[in-house]
Image 1 (tube, one colour):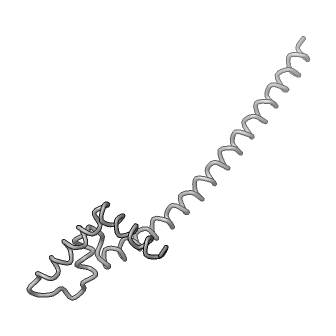
Image 2: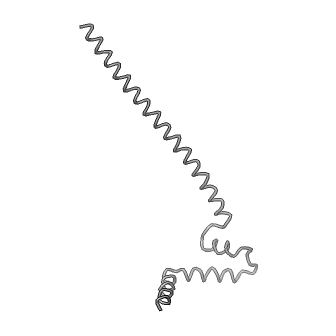
Image 3: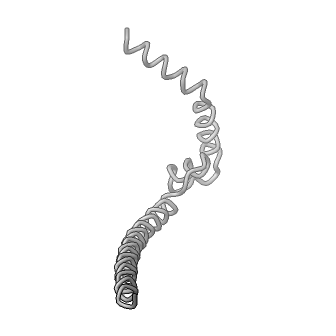
Length: 110
């Protein structure tokens, strides 16, 4: 009995959220096609608003390329941050050395 109650609750959920209407409309549109499409799945995806299989594959390839580019840019960014820190460190050391040299010079002059 519990299984039937779960099924009924799920049916109500699909109906109240508009899924049943949307699927019915798409299936009716497919049924009414004089020439049936070669891929019923692609037809349904297009009618519902999803990408076709070829569009999906293209998007997957683009995402993969972008992930590679992101990793390359992240590595370059991290390298530049490291270089910047090294420059900051060397400037601090140089500045401290110059300050020390100036103090020695002032001490010797006085």
